[in-house]
Length: 604
Figure 1 (cartoon, rainbow, N blue to C red):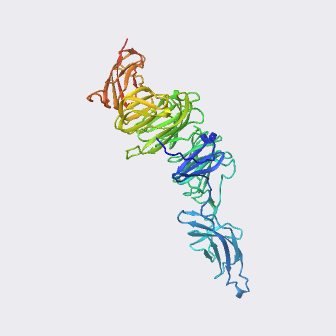
Figure 2: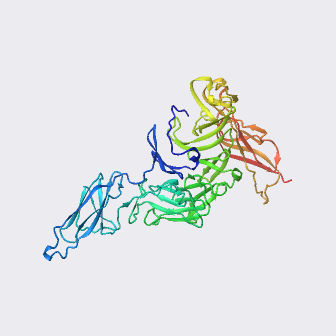
Figure 3: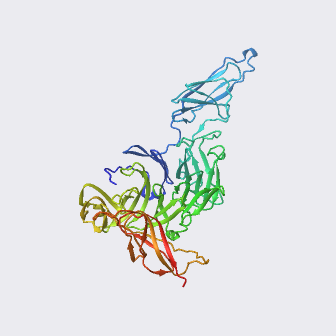
């Protein structure tokens, strides 16, 4: 990946705070949360115009101003000496509505007048100035509460004793994050609401914006369904909300358990009646943001270092937590924890995870086929961070998830950090495939014998040029790499080894016994591969045999990629575990879908 220019923007955060920043995105705005900062957002006005702003909670439409209330009293009951005329104070406020955004302003400054609206022909005229599309008028009698009495498209309203609807009152301005100690550290979206959680003063608190009005925490008196919502996750201990994930339900991953936030009417979250937090289990979660794959949330626990998955089950009508590292516990022993991860759904359905020691783990996840498992990727580098971005590879009409890494590598004795993008998984020929670390790819109209890779100067690299492999080439001090045969398609990078070892086979014999713990010898070994070339097979790593792959290719052309079942040669040896190794040391593709072993049981 090449860039022509690097743009930067000042942020309110410093380097030591980066690991504790939470974020969520809505189109051209990314909302951030951190305990030390007011809620803020990064907005994009153009490709080269980005700005950090504190979130200004509240409606963007201004309240009406210049409000007046004028009584008209043609009826004072003069024929009855005025004894029936009983004037009382009426108080008024008005709010503005913007039909384009659907927002309603906070109420205007209150005004009042005195009149007896119970007598015929008496009325009050309320006038104001404003920029709304429509206006809502509220009245309170004496010192009572305000209630809705009507709507106007102009800037005046006549009240001739309209009975206020006290179930519909004006908005009350509210910002729960004004002071230090009240800044949230978790941010998310759910059901057209922007949500925040976990402040220093209220670690178990959760705050949701008004429905369909993300930057508005206002409420009404009395409470309306679409008002902002405040929730507390309370159980037997202090449940600090470390992360919040919207799945089929809203899930709060706290330090002491998983909570399911359910709307009181079971259909959606509303302020009235308020939601119900229901504890699902006592498996607390860490601050690492969960990864969502399909309808499952993968998370790391507050105590321990395994990987757990939370998903809904009909059997318990709730969420259970499964240990997804149970078959690879050695990857998470001691202080080894996941510090960053991301899910690349297409085309391989993998979670890429960076471990605290800099190792890279890959979790393959195919729920429909019940296929899942962990792989450790040991390469010449220390992985620091990972992100996944959907992109269209060059020449492709469909997008895939491209995986980006921040990697620290020692090149020729110098420590450097690289931003690397994993090569596309969509390719047709071996010439297009790239299976190298920190690689550079070139395509030339005319074949060349030399390319320039200055960032790898002094490093030992492998080259795949027009499908031919050139191993253990040292990049010259000036960054040049040379091969003997002119080539148009080049991939130059750091080599790594891909290794598969099968599990021991335990087979029940017709007599009812099994071969576990008995001396075994392998017969035929068959590999089922897809678009594969250059692999080696063997019973011992020190003695491997190449899978014969040349078929009908013209002399001098690269070997063709293999797809199908192929018989593999192995050493004639007996042991108590009939296992096989499959190895790829070349920068060539290897996809193994099945390994068929034919063990020969020795009863002695």
